[in-house]
Amino acid sequence: MGRRIDISRRREGILAEKAFAWLCRLAVFLPLVILLWLLGKVVATGIGRIDLDFLTEAPSQLDAATGGIWPALMGSVWLIGLTAAVSLPIGVGAAVYLEEYGKRSRLATLIEIAIANLAGVPSIIYGMLGLGLFVRALALGETVLAGALTLSLLVLPVVIMSSREALRTVKDALREAALGLGATRWQTTRHVVLPMAMPGILTGAILAISRAIGETAPLVVVGAVGFILFAPDGVDSEYTALPMQIFQWTSSPQRAFLVNAAAGIVVLMFTLFLLNSVAILLRNRFQKRMY
Amino acid sequence: MACYTPCAVVPESDMKIKVSSLRAWFGNHEVLKGIDLAIPAREVTAIIGPSGCGKSTFIRCLNRMHELIAGARSEGHVLLDDTDVYAPGVDPVLLRRRVGMVFQKPNPFPSMSIRDNVLAGLRLTSRLERAKAAEIVERALRHAALWDEVKDKLDKPGTSLSGGQQQRLCIARTLAVDPEVVLMDEPCSALDPIATARIEDLLHDLRRDYTIVIVTHNLQQATRVSNKTAFFLQGELVELNDTERMFTSPQDRRTEDYITGKFG
Image 1 (cartoon, each protein chain N blue to C red):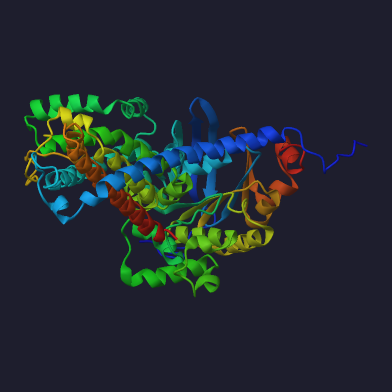
Image 2 (image 1 turned 180 degrees about the vertical axis):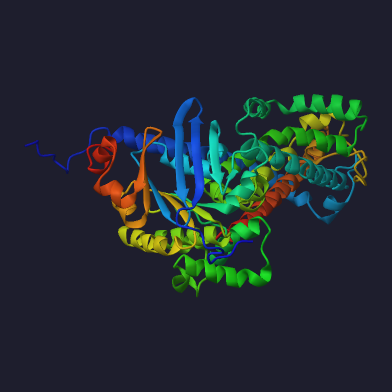
């Protein structure tokens, strides 16, 4: 017979256990508090500056209290729209090739490694690539299209990887079921695999594109201008973007412009929030069709 | 298109599938080492043998599903009504419409209702005539002995059914494509005894219209459902015989050892 354990005594190691739990709690709440504090400060500084005029007027270089961020806001909208239009089809297509078609080839393995590495390349390097490739070699100039293509390159690895992840969650048993019924690879992918992977693909893609919306460094390199009075009116327009405008305001010597920068940050974050909400809505819509 | 009821009177002795020197590999590992075997039309042929003997791989070679696995390949001859399914120019996609398959675990499409699951094969390959959809659904579900249980909830998701019902739904889905041969890879291994019994009953009805090849690790099941039994061991066919003879007077010592439970 074993010794009888006294169940009302203090368990050994209980202090370490509790300390660890508290450490984990701290790891969650400390950054959260710092983040909220920063956010609160920015919002408190900037919110008063935001009105309809701020959103719909061009910036003023002379008077910080007038003008707004219309060109930057529209520039960002153009960039995001074009980036999504370019990177989504290519990214999802590449992911489908790698997961559904290319699985056996050595080439696919090589591509996979390359993509994983590309995802870690600093964004300014993509800016250099965009400058050399789109702005100069393809002679697109310092246009919103060149900027969007550069951002597309930047988010493509992430879109591909998250799409592959989503495709991988679809069980092979379902692929076999479709193929066993005499469906082709394409029919299987189109009608069985993609619908099931769609929520995951969309979530990943929109998160990746949200990353692009905050990028400044590559845009500086491919020639987004810091100060412009007009919104883009086509893919070949000059442009600026929200983070560029914010950067320009923060580097201004007059303190009054800092308020504009704070207001700009609030607008940028709200845009991001909107984009992510759309992602969640889309995902829920697709998931509803899934039973 | 073929029809559900027997289209022509086929003599008992007719062989639907003739397999010769069939070999199959996973990478460098040879799982089938030259199989010669004929499968009679409109009968149930059971494939038995211990785990890893190549019985699943064997039936997956019959509709060329084996080659879909990365690193898997096969060679040899599989004649389906005198056409070699491994001949160049044979489209495995079209082959699989004539040789259907039911898998080990029920795998209805989770994104589809019961009705859509039955129609999936036709819809995926865009061969569905809308006017006939209701008729096809009812016929396939009746054939799979599921109609009475689901006729009032055809719009419910296929995955809302019990495991045994899901498997019969998968059988209905396979039948809706109107195949000539139905391959079944341990179709009852994930089911309880009652659901298993229902599927076995179903097999008795199906063999009037279809050529059925069923892999099973359950020897009693082989005796209950099949006319012919093939015993596989380590990638080779040890014995093929009428099921009754196989289990009463096996010709090979290894068969006897296996069916009497000396190994396996």
